[in-house]
Structure formats: C-alpha cells, structure tokens
Length: 462
Image (cartoon, rainbow, N blue to C red; front, side, top):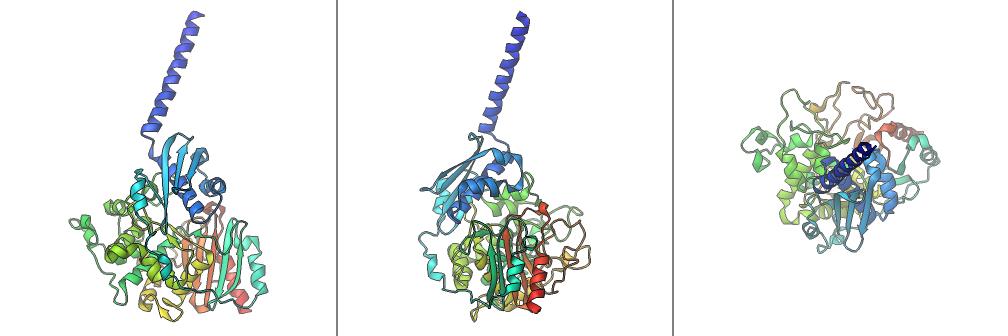
C-alpha cells in the first residue's frame, strides 16, 4: 500500500510538472497555430466593433467561429475602447494576439506587439472627408418581382447580410439581414483584390504600363526580377504560395503573424517547375501590388484611395485597412456598406466613369476585365481576368474541374468580384446590372448566388 501511495504521488507530481511545463511553453513560445487564432480573433473583433459598431460578443460567437476550428471557442477577448486596443488570449492566458484601431485606417494586427508603431500610422490629421462628394443612389421604380426574389431564402442564401440590386445606375431593390442596414460597413474579404486593381489603375493613369518588371530590390539578383505587374495582376507570377485557411499557411501567416505583409510575400521563392499551374491564386501577390502602388505614390499613399476613388464615388463608409507597417492589406480588408460596394461595381460597369468624371481610364478597365489566357480552366475557357477579377461565379460545392456557372442562364459578359464566406458582386454591362450579395456563408454550405442573379436578369426582361 505504501508503494502504491508513493507511486500515486509520484505520478501526480509528474503530471503537475508536465502541466506546468506546458503552461510555461504556451506562455513563452506559443505555437504559430495558436497565435494565428488569437490574432485573427482580435482583428475580427476590433474591425467589427470600431468600424461597424457591432456587439463584440456577437462578433466573437458568430463571425470569429464561423470557420469552425475548435480552438476559436476557447479564446477570450478584452477591449480597451479609449485606446482602441483589442487583446485576445487562449484560455485568457496564452498566445496573446493584439489588434489596434487607427482613425481612417481601421484595425491592424500587431503580431510583434508594437502598439506604438501601429498607432503612429493613421489618417487622423489628414481630413479625408474633404475628398468625399455627396453622391446618393438614384432610386428606381419599385419592382415587385425583385421583392419576391429577395424574399426567397434559397435564392439569397443562408447567412445573408445584404443584397443590393442596381439597374441602369438606379437602386431598384435591397434587403438586409437582422442587425444590418444600409449604413453597416461589411467586410469584402477578397473582393478587396479587385479594388486594389482599381487603385492601381488610378495610379498608372492613361499611359498604364503593366509590363514593368524588376519590382522589388530583393528580386534583382534572381529570376523573380522578370515578374511583371501584369503577372501579379493576373495571378500568374509563378511565386510559391499556399492559400489554405485551415491552419498555418502562407496566407494566414501573412495576415496574422507578419507585421510587414509585403516583405513576407516578396521573400517567397518561385515555385519549382511542375509544382503549380500558370494561374495560381494568391493573396500575397495582391499585397505586393499594394506595396508597388504605394511606393509609386510616396508620402500621400495612405490618403490616395480616398482622394482618387472612395471620395469621388461618395463612399463615406469605406475603410481600407493596413498592416502593422502601413501597407494596405489590399487582398482582404476593405469594409464598406453594401450600397458603397455597389458603387465599385458600377464604376467597372461604366468603364471607369462616375458622374461624368473619368476616375480610371476606360482602356485600363477593358484590359483589367479582359480574360487572362493563363487562367484557362479545364472546362475550356479562362476563369480569371487580367486584373484581379473573376470570369465565373462562386464555386462552393462544385466538384473540382467543373464549370461553376454551368446550368445557370447568365450573360457571357458577366464579371464577378468574389470574397470569402459568401461575398460577391455580379457586374453585367449588357444588362446595365450590378448585384451585390454580402453575408457570412462558409463555402461548406454550398451556396452560390448565380441562381439569384439569373432570376434577377430574367425578371428584369419580363
């Protein structure tokens, strides 16, 4: 019995030491997966609270945990509203993640904990409101058929937060999910990539040259010096990249562990021959485009999107967020109301013109929305444009290698802005139509907005 008691105590002591060692390890050097989870949680709560005015508990319970990873359910959030700092920790103790709000630039992750540096990057003293012109959507005639379509839960999809329909530059229908309205800024995720392409067009101007190469100093002495702006725009740079979101990948590392996103993207090598297709989707290449145009603009880069794009369009709700060193996260982080997202679609539809002002050269828009031959899919046609825009709709639930638009009656000139968790804008020049659909709709639910868009097109023709 004595030996049993001693053995039990020794075993308990061993487990106590093991727990203590684990806690010390998690506190001092937490695994990257945990840091991704906490920085992601802090960033999502920060942006939705300070930009959209949403309830932090709701954001954490619904938005943060939408991805379904079990770790996200064990993260606690602390918000210091006066300082604009949000801190997330696993079990309230480990793997501290931090996000910081800055006026005019939204929230940014602080993976290195340098809050002071983040706070110094701001538009607080630049009066961006001076660039914004009053521009309300003209209201079109009430259309009962549109009401019926937007009341159909199967067509608008689960987790819908906003649908806006623009016909011939007039707002003819809209609907919103509970807790969301015409003023709520909504995250576009990868629809932001198309916005980065628009900003690039505003920077390059009428004589745009997308053949420019030798784009970064660290590429000068190897084969990457041959990568052109055009290659980055069409997702055909050949750079190694993992866009997976399930664990620690290139994209999650860039967004939540790297203070300088562009430096991380530029550090990656070319993929080895045969490892990737000519068209290789990459959020990293879009952040590189942000760094390129910001380098071209210089000191006024932080206000440039408002001065040349958001302001003239009347996008009062728009906030394009940066990383910890001031590079715009142009792959992922634009918040804007659904009506303001529609303005971007209308700008593309009208060839870069808004209220009789040419914001972006028409030739650039035509090039940008043209098919990138490098993206020809297995079903026989290109699936991506020359400039950060899709030629097909969402592919949720579609077997690999099959056309996502097969079986839908959609015009051939349709172009799509697409983003994570069910964000989409369908742009159809032949119909004078822009359809915005925003939501929290993970791809695992299999929802695609193509049927809704096709029904809207059909109803407007009857």
